[in-house]
Length: 124
Image 1 (cartoon, rainbow, N blue to C red):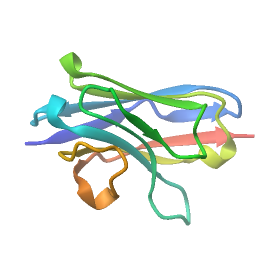
Image 2 (cartoon, rainbow, N blue to C red):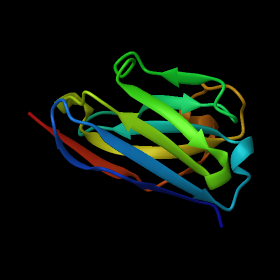
Image 3 (spheres, one colour):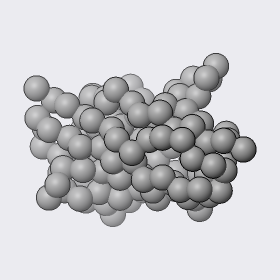
């Protein structure tokens, strides 16, 4: 059974940092483009970052460029999202997702598996 389990969310003050982790099982992790998405209250799910099979290519939304960094450790079947300089606008449920497509700018519909999400709350 495929599982993606996010962790690392929590409450942090503006300007602080968090590192999210997504542990994958039941799939060939190295053949998955991994994406991070988020859904804020009252908003649609949006892409935050994506990282290619071996981490050679990444994508970041304009709102997080320079603040967030995606990385992956294929030996551990884990993808990370380092979030620095957090803003209240970053408050959302963050989801990890896996796609068998090689590109990093694909739409959410190309992602085959999704985690349950982890809550990130940034206070001002």
